[in-house]
Image (tube, rainbow, N blue to C red; front, side, top):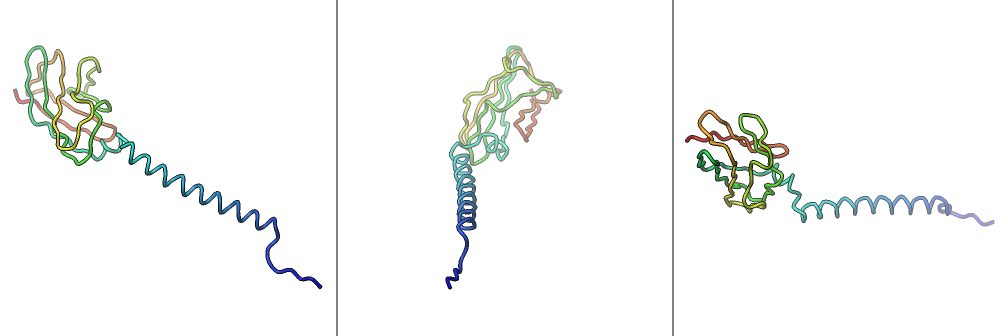
Length: 137
């Protein structure tokens, strides 16, 4: 009499496939997280960033705001939007210099054709953050 103890080949193959799928899924999520960190996912970086608007110079032709990235991570200014008194400023009317700002570095926001005064509120917005400043000229 031949009594076999163990699992059938069908169950063994099913277990091996399940283990392989689980291992592949785990590996995928680990690699995806590492790639996101390496890419420096700018939206995540901006969500964690703090900006400090340090100064404002304004005349009839343009206004320039000096802004500091007060965080420990770089930000990409191309993902920022500008509003004055809660109204969007068109992309052609403003520019940031430089585009990528390292931690603890200043950058400029230039708004053409606007003379900012005490009654106007400038807002710089990212995906989940908003920074507000009133130009005291």
